[in-house]
Every structure is written in C-alpha cells, then in structure tokens.
Image 1 (cartoon, rainbow, N blue to C red):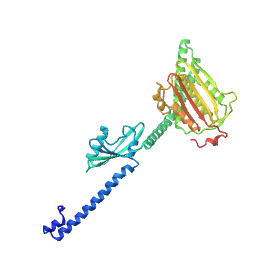
Image 2 (image 1 turned 60 degrees about the horizontal axis):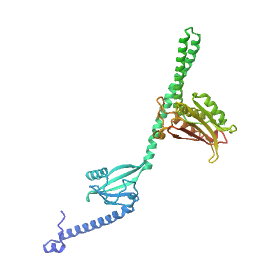
Image 3 (image 1 turned 60 degrees about the vertical axis):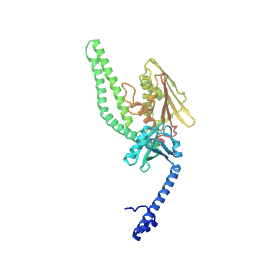
Image 4 (image 1 turned 180 degrees about the vertical axis):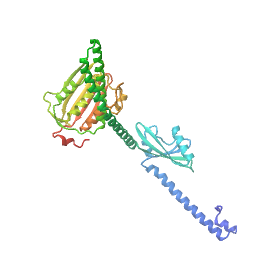
Length: 384
C-alpha cells in the first residue's frame, strides 16, 4: 500500500520508525522520477505533432478539434480542420468507438479520388483521441491494379478455353452449310421454297460468322502477341480490309493515305484484325448512315506511323469512355465486350498505342500509333 503523502518531518514527529521513513522516501523518489519522465514525454509529444510528417489531430469525445499540426492543414476539404472546429458525425463516432474499445481504430476517407488512412489512438486519461493521417492513394491504386490484373488473367484463361472448345464445332457448321447449299441446288422443289431455304442458310451462315468472330476475339485476347514483321503496303492493306468488311450503301468511305506512302515493317494480320474491328464498330455507330474516314501518315516527332479510323456516328457517352477497353464491357445488345480490348492488346503487343476522342452525336475517332522499324522480327521480339 502506498503511504500517505506526508513530509518526512511529520512522519518523524508521529514517531515513525526509520524503516517506514525509508520506504516513504523511496516511494517519493519513484513518484518524482515518474513525473519527470511523464513531463519529458509530454514535452516530447507536444513537439512531435508539429514535426510529424503526417497529419495529427486531437479531438475530444464531443468532436471538437483541440489541436491540428501543420501537416493536417494540407489535407483536402472537408477533412482539413483547425482547432475550435467540430468534426463530422462519422469522425466523432470513430473517436468515441476508439475511446470505448480502449484501442486503436483505423478508417479510410476518399476525397477527390485521393485516399487517406487515419489511425485513431485513444488517450484515455485525458478523454480525447489523437488522429494520425497519411495519404495512401498510390497503395490503393496499386491494389486495384493488382485486382484488375488478376481479373483479366482469369478472363484470359476462360477465353482461351471457350475459344478452343467452340472453334471446331463452328468450322463443322460452316462446312455443312456449304454442303447444304450445294445439295439445295440439286433438289427439285418449288422456286419459292428454294428461295426460303437459301435465305435460311444465308442467315445461319451469317450468324455462324458472327459466332466465329466472338471466338476469334476470345482467342486473340487470350493468346500471346508475337508480331511477325514484314514489309507491308499499308494503303493496300487498308483497301483489302475494307473489301472484307460489310459496308452499307448509306455509309461513304474515304481513304486518306498518300499513293507514295512507304512500305513499313508491320504484322499485316494484326493490323488487319484491328482495322476490321474498328471499321465494324464505326459502321454500327452509324445506323442511319454517315461518313467513315481512314487515314495514315508518318509522324516526325516522335517518329511513328499513325492510322486513324473516324466516323460521324452516335459517339461514346462520357460515362462509358473510361471502360471501353475493359473486357466484357459493351453497350451493344449483341456485343460481348472483347472487340476493343482485343484491339488494345494487339496494338500494344505490336509496340504501339491506341487512343480515341469522341463527341456524342458527332462521332468517334480512334488513333493508332506504331513504331517505325527499320528491321524485321528482332525489333519486337520481346513483345509477348
């Protein structure tokens, strides 16, 4: 038991023995030492928040800000607070929960796409909390990127499996459609019925080709991109790609590629695949007709081949623009959400980049930038 706080002289007058007096002195020394240590800690704590590279706030259980160090003033509103202000109700609740639980409590605030981690430390004796804050935006983004990478990897594995399993049955269907068309020509039946059969086969064939495109998108997204570079006449490649696409009569096409455009080292199959997707999208964006313009030119600084595919269609809504290269995202009733992600993957695998600009009601323009290469395969060998 701690002796009562009487002076040594008083204890002597009361007839206290030397043992009791010695014990009291020892206890007093310990108390003095403890208080000195506490004073030093208080001095240290008083200095520490002002020197702390992170935000430090002191808040009482009523939500009143008692102290705010200079770093806390750099926090964005509304979490930028000064002494005398009251914090939000959610912050007051965090403070009271930490005091009740008698342990630290963490919470995250997101302001204007910036994330902040706050640790609430209860100071039980005084009845207030210290809140230590630091920005964790980079860490949050890195975690999101990791989750996205894992998601895309899973999509890629599924795409490869589905594409492989569907390719052979589709080829069998296409082969049987061809045989059926040949047999139909040999069958004697009324002309009207024969026309109806031919229309049905034509529709089946068209649907099968659409399914085949989906499989191709799945496989292209899943496979490694290893460009095989050969000298390519880009103007001819663009013309041949247009001939293979279905262009409605109400869509006018303009090719803006100089006749003397030099041959380039390109993987023609990759560029053809990307152009086919972009042209198809442009046509679908102009259901009432419009203008499709494809251009190519050389950029001097930095050196690059630039290909643009522009339409006068409906445009892309602002809310959708950040997601159009995301697998499985689509605004089409019959879309699968792999066309543009495949374009991005193929172009980046070719060492280039793809971007776009769009105005609702005025159209969309996709821009492809590819490196100008003087050698063939070796320049892109590492782009898997």
